[in-house]
View 1: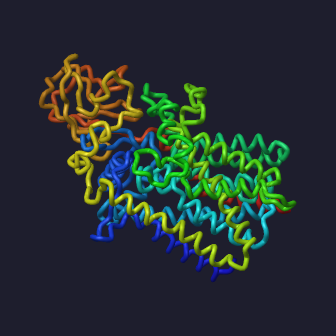
View 2 (view 1 turned 90 degrees about the vertical axis):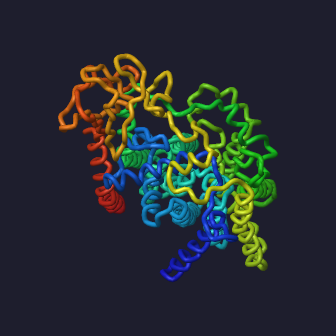
View 3 (view 1 turned 120 degrees about the horizontal axis):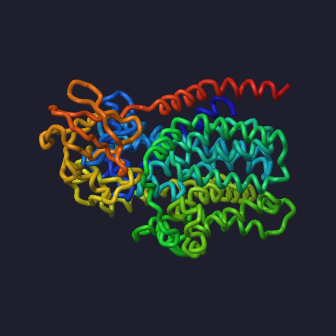
Length: 567
């Protein structure tokens, strides 16, 4: 592609990205809006916490002030923030408002998703695994980029659920798949896409990462005839590099989980979770007013997929989906779409390892990727068959997809929206989110009543009482007014690894981490205040060094390996 064409493509993607963000703009009165989705409160509280940390410390901390209830929570130790909350917090600080920051974040995210999808699909088609015509190969990458980026599940995650992790995950999937197939069909020339894509996904959303790894294992088994020593070397190298890049995300979390008896993420019943997507009929929905009925791939993925199935049954030696790869693509897409519904027998998989996905609708991420591939191939095949009218057909098809944000915008304005809130306290004042929504108990130490953290309830000489503290950066300043000197005190603060306790003179105090995970001092000092400091552990620092060093050296290593391989 020439420089001029590249600039034109980037400009077009930027315009399309602006169109995509229309649901956030309320045109009747100039301001930004968002639906009060199920994940909005959590991710906005994470962002407010991150902005406080950046203002107070200059960098993110593992444990910080969280929620309107202002309690210490190790949210950054257990939830990836590098590609989601951190850039959103920086944009929010730059423009002074989280809604404007989120608008810019979605704009950038959509632009990157379009680029990733376009170049990922373009490379995939060059592998010639499917008998697509030359003209089809030219238009299919652009069609895929639009179909994939404007898919219903992505719209739902970004504008309705405000699910930062799953919305951002869409950026990395095309690169991961293109890089993975390059190992088998192009001597691993794009293994860097697999490495950086997988690491980026891990830094974005753990559950999506596990799903993709499982999917890649299935693909690996299906590609068994292509196994060779070279392929396995490339695969092991790519996995090792992705793991080293992700060390700063994975190691601190595993270290804390080994140190404390941590409450895991909420494990939902798969059968109950499947009710969120409903029956097969809901696959044809688009932004239905009924709650959860839109957690599907949606009509704009399903109809092109059905068109692909129709093409498969049409006669012809050069049938696009009649070869082995095309057939597997159709089968896997159909199976994934079927698995997102409550018709699939999820009861047989209860209590299995697959329950880690929490909700079957998460499979929509992979179903959307494969469905968009089928859809773009279907459109490319049809448009090349009607070449005389291809310009008109392309225009009409794209207008249908580009109109979807306008439909979403109409839906949002008919629902309860958020438009002015700038702090975690504003979320509480609104009254829409209850106490549970405005707090988070996942990954806190296991305790009979987790609200003790929320209500800052500790113990003085075995008697339960409120022990207030103020969290600033990574420091909790404990109010000692109620505490008599030499008392045995259990603070309402989690004893994460790396924590230290100091008196008002800055001297270290002896303490233990109780069985319930709280900080316990057997003889409380007679002092004006006590400070609990959550410091980075040695392993935390080492993991950062490993990931940073890998990031710097990996391009050099890749260039050296490619140079040596070409000789």
